[in-house]
Length: 461
Image 1 (tube, rainbow, N blue to C red):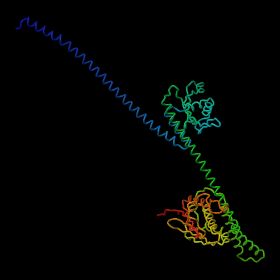
Image 2 (image 1 turned 180 degrees about the horizontal axis):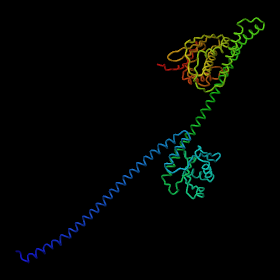
Image 3 (image 1 turned 60 degrees about the horizontal axis):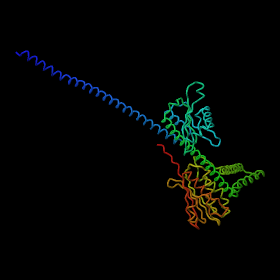
Image 4 (image 1 turned 45 degrees about the vertical axis):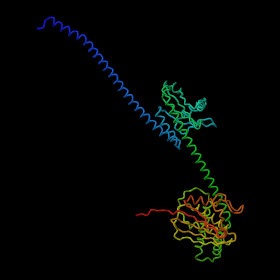
């Protein structure tokens, strides 16, 4: 057995060991808890940062989606060619930026110093408000500074005590103010961000481009209508000039049935009329009425009517040939017809084609001052209706062939031609989706050939 001294020594030794180990253990525990706390903080920070990144990514995606939508719609504004489309799309885009009570574009008229609404989207009250700001010099300021302004709606504030504002965005084009985009909104002034103002400015600039495109289109339409009107007048003048040249032939064409009528009436009055007297009178009256009707149709004002009639080319060519026949006979020019009997009708305008035929026959007549022969032929060839007008005249010099269809070009003596005939012919034939070509040889004659497309119809099964 161990002695008491030995036990006491062992106990003392254990106590010494514990005294030295326990603090170290406690220190370890304390360090471990600190470590765990630090780790928890780190994990919490990492989770928070991750969530922040996720939120940022969501915000970025939303912003990108909004920007893509804004860009797509703003392009619609810039390319729109109709005012209602411009303002409608502009308001839709604006509503993605700020709430809109009403909005409208007002164009600045420098002559009257008024803001004129582009469309009827805005109310009369909004128009009055815009005009008041113009008179107050605010519009001139936003034009010079190229800045958007937010103006309190004082009338609403006084009545209801609530805040509403007018936003005036300048419409700038090439550095010049052409108008304002005015928005009535419930958004408070202090809630407007710099980004809101920037977006509204971008939209207004796109709207300015759209307005300019629309204005340009309107100017082009107006110029085109004026050009059409001028061309119609030019064509009408050329037509009446041609009819004036053929006055003798027209009188002769009308005189023949009148003479027959006069003779038959005289015979009837003498009591010598036979059974065929009445049918003969009716025939000549119908002939006279038809000549008069067609001459009136031909001489009426030229119009850009739709080319939807079915035209009998042989009939119209023969009609013009009959009008000019007497004139040709007096100039010792014979006429030969070689018209295809199975010629189909073509889609077009009888009146316009008559003018082509008349111009070409007059040119042929003038090319044969010493007399000659004129041949009028029609045929179907290569899926086209072809019209050939040939003369045995003086021909056309090679150096003049390239200018033949140019407006105001003529080889006739001064005072005997306007130089419009062939250019008019080319325009009319082109409108009929056809072609007109010419071949000529000096001293032997000239042939004009007109190519017109045939109507294509689907055969039923």
